[in-house]
Image (tube, rainbow, N blue to C red; front, side, top):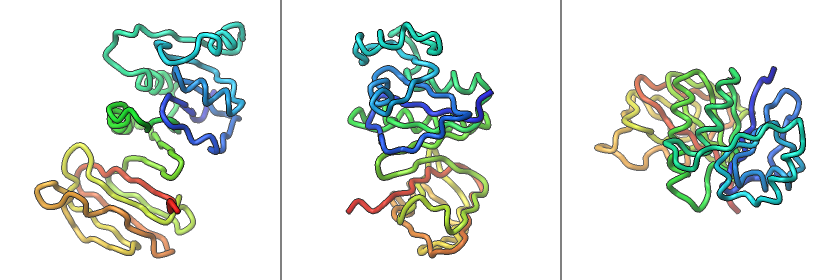
Length: 217
């Protein structure tokens, strides 16, 4: 039924994000309902243990028969955001955009990065958006068209272990069969740039976390 999902969770939400409502499953996660409400989005699903959403806001949607409310036990192994991702995956959705995945709670921000890998290994692509950045995971080979870059900068960071045999072509700072390994480097790969042409990333083994960013000026 749905081609993709938009999950709005309780971190810092870029409310300027353009939502393709048609064919998109809208999921609000606990306190993320505030942002969804401000964006005039009526979620199909509201999920969470509801420890951060105002009760009066939640009541606004409880009487809407088009809204499914899933209340979670606050004592659980996964976060509310992970539960939302797993729910979307159960609907056989393979593309998820995530708003509010970063914020002042660094523990939640860091944990959310691992959701990218959990989903990726099951054939689901999660893209996280902040006000300045687009964040996702890659492995194997990734091709970029010159008009597909999100912003001026693009950073490649090893994730959950070394990324071996990395080759960057079509970037300001190219690499050839380089191993991203903390025993060799900690920050190589930060703030690369496109040359304004098609580009390609090849990874022989492992994953890279990619952060495409706008200039913060």
